[in-house]
Image (cartoon, rainbow over all chains, first blue to last red; front, side, top):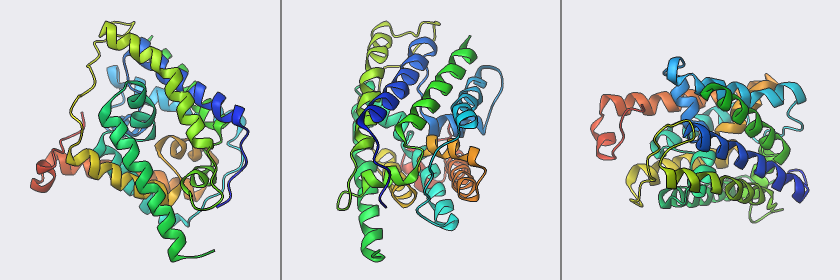
Length: 138
Length: 150
């Protein structure tokens, strides 16, 4: 999977925006911008004091609705993606966080648990990609 | 006010993900593929995000309260437990298979394409399954410390 060559300024500026959003949500609202948790809890309650979660998700998709998402190269058939989705949904609930909750917010909060979680899912994902390549050479 | 801040945070987060290119699964997989044409972009994005979010977290940690008055719990100091490690492992497998994590997954729904709905549909099923299993207190999950999501 080649991927696009992304200029460093785009990575850094994009990351800075993500960090600014996570910082804003914590500084003003005291909430963690962990998207797996926001999605899962939105499925349970979306009103009253819980309404901020679906509102955050609405905001999350607005830029893509107006600007489009740019190139999207799916690497797997939908059956594999659905399976991957189940694993991501189940795993992130079990670990109480994903790339945003542990990888951005938890690391920014100097949480040792989040550092361990991030190291674990990045390492396992690297092994998974390598295994898939070994089983099906291009 | 809370909702307005959440809306703004969502928009800025979504714009950041788009700008970083991490909404394209191929760009995520290019980072995870360390033996191939490795691309470090995801690491730059994550490092910048952590650096920018850090001061806000430091302020709230010291105040123990957010600006709107919400009390904020200190981070748990315990390091490893089974749900954290097992859950992160399961998540890592799904992330490596797809190149998609929850944020980009939700954003990719705007393409209206079948792969996006397949992934997010699976995401819902997995999250609900974890919640139901935790809520029912299945013994094997209870032993792992899994409880109903609140």
